[in-house]
Image (cartoon, rainbow, N blue to C red; front, side):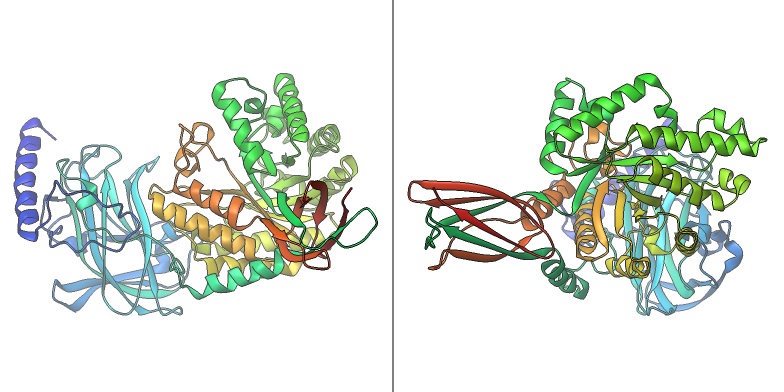
Length: 616
């Protein structure tokens, strides 16, 4: 944009916005609300007319089907009865593609955009036909060529009545005309929806996002009174707690009535964990010391980010640091997940692996020796191993050596480390609205194959990297139910929510943790990181760089450290007994009777526990 056109744009835009804001009674100086997770603001600001349009006059005609699976969709312009528009795009998804972005309606920007410009997208949608009685439409605005940097993205559902969607956002970078795309994603289950009143306008940089009307991002089941939530909380009470009985006796074995009993849970039986940096665990940097402190306070299980991957393991310096960090974890009584023994693609393996692609026996021996070496060196130091990682998208080695080699890898891992639980691990199972059926089917088929070959598979690892297409809790629970047929524990191994709406991020974190904790097959949730200063996706962290918890961090603290932890003080009854229901895990029991005190420790398993404390 030239200086002249930028000045003209800024002046006109400011006058238009000031006018409509004064007319609507909205003051640009009014306090901004924390409305990122609220319903659309009730303002009369007509965002379909303010600023400069980024779409041509024939807006509907500018949109075309795109994506690698565009042939799975149909789109046509039809008449519409609506006070704001007379025509709409009728879009039909004939068959669900593997990913939602493989079928979408796209239109390019007709005017240049500067980084930081406030863009307002608006459209109406309604569902004509859908097996779920509601259709889905995802919105993204991003670069039209690699790396497709995204400025904004969100998914919402639409019922049979017209519903307006309004998305204000800030341009992540500058785009010349035709360089960015407005995408309306359609890659869901077969459905027919209509979309009309489409508007995409550049409001410049003289307006705050907070005063613009915004449709709440979300997912089905976010409501506080959603039926799934009540059922999940009831399951948690039933499956995560056990009966605890404390009996207080004096030195002669007689009951001590009304003694004060303090019950303190010191560790959860459920795994609550995070990916961590091995080198940060052995560093004396002040931030790393704080990092270590939070790990001890918050987590009973961790996984190293990269330190046990093959390319790090063969580096003597990295290996030494990893072993030292492992000792730190053992002293802190924190379990370690081993990640990963085999990531079966060339790009995820050291270069010398692909160098043997023309010699199958040598390649097979190299991988076998690696499993024996690493699992053997870590024998007794890890709680579980990801033996096989992401075979759906990483299969170069499997293509060459054949599927039976997977069974060999599990058997070698068992021999090298007999006590570690052995897992398969993959992504795309719960993420993306739960719509990646090909990925899910491959995962199930691989598990079935391994078990049919008597591979010593002990657990199922599901990653859980979520973006704007947040999966409804009911859908995730359905997928977990399906995987439960294998009668293997399921662990969430790499959980994060990479969205910038922190209130929505917190809501989903709360609901994800609740759904997982409520499912009887799930034995743990391990995040992909927790601190903004050491996270591959900083927006997903629970703690900011200054160590203040974000909204999603407050959710973690509330659920993991308070609601799902038993810490209570009660008096024994007249017979010297106290009975309660408590969350399973490790406990310290303290009894006080006058000047007499006594402590005991115990584990509370599913079957319950009785402990007798004899006062001195």
